[in-house]
Amino acid sequence: MENRYSKAAVLGMSLLLLTSCGGDKAGPAPSSPYTPVASPSETTRPDEAPQLEPTVEQRELFHFINTQLTGPDGVYTNLKETSEAAEVATGHEILSESASLLMETAVRTRNQELFDRQWKTARRTFDMEGGFSYRYSPRQQKRYPVNAAVDDLRMIGALYEAGQAFSQPEYTREADKYGERFYKNNTKKGYIYDIYDNYLKVVNSFVTLCYIDLSVLQKLSISSELQENLLKNMSGILEEGYLSDSFPFYETRFDYQSGQYSSEGINSVESLLTILHLAETGRQKPASISYIKAQVAAGTLFGQYTREGKPANDIRSTAVYALTAMIGAVLEDGDLYQSSIERMNEFRVTDPVSPLYGGFGDPASGQAYSFDNLMALLAYSYKAP
Image (cartoon, rainbow, N blue to C red; front, side, top):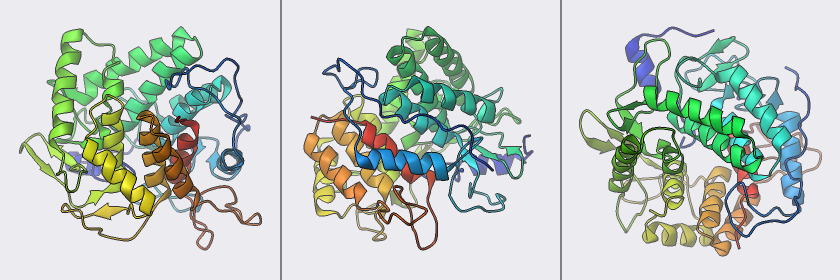
């Protein structure tokens, strides 16, 4: 059931949507996504990626997610339960972000059974007339009436990839259908917007740069003229959001009304996701990659910075190193991929008596977030030479 908001409240909500760029009894256990396949290809496309024997870390993480962090509606936002009444998702609320990350992992690990189950659950939990709800609260029985463009695009991209990986034209047809819906509702005059409100039928006034997934935008089932205009506009916004060669990260958002970029602080996860999207289309800045490699090697890639590049805290996170691993894999930089995975694994819970064993979280508090765990699972599925 949808919650009704004032227009101002709904549009303000887009600032709270992305914690990553910023989730009862478990259902049937999906099979492990790490089943080797014969005749691997030499390419790194998800539908053709070579599959290796899964590591112990991969198996243990999947087991933790499946047995501890998953309920009948999807992956919990956090292992610890809450009243699910906060402005941001907490506890056993479910995010479309999580569904899209698991769908992408299923494609990359060539597990159609896992993909089918995740897609079926995602449609039941999130699908609305105007988009995929970004958040569902089982305790409140509330489906939030706004989507998050980044998660809709990741889901659509996973459907396109699944159509190729599993030779299933139905996935491709569904990707076309949902892609057309996304273009109709989340784009205006060739520009994408963070959210579309399924009740008020409005968008917000800006785009968060890490929401701009160029590799999926270029697959949308729209005319070549519309697609060319969309890619030109959005790649321009991405590239012009570059801060500087001395601190080669990116602004947070671009406001269409003022024509200005803004950032309260530079969140590493957001900038790294932006850099990943650029790297997937060959638009990455060399200075960004050099900076990332140096910080990963030193173990000093922190969670937030000032716009001048000074660390705003000393927090390091699983998701940050998962993203640098993905960037390394996309760029076929084996050293960056491997060093990032090693840094990421420093955060694994290795105590066999801990309820968090095999996952990523804080045993002292019992906190384990979906985004960290699912980004780590996805990073394991990438391969680099």
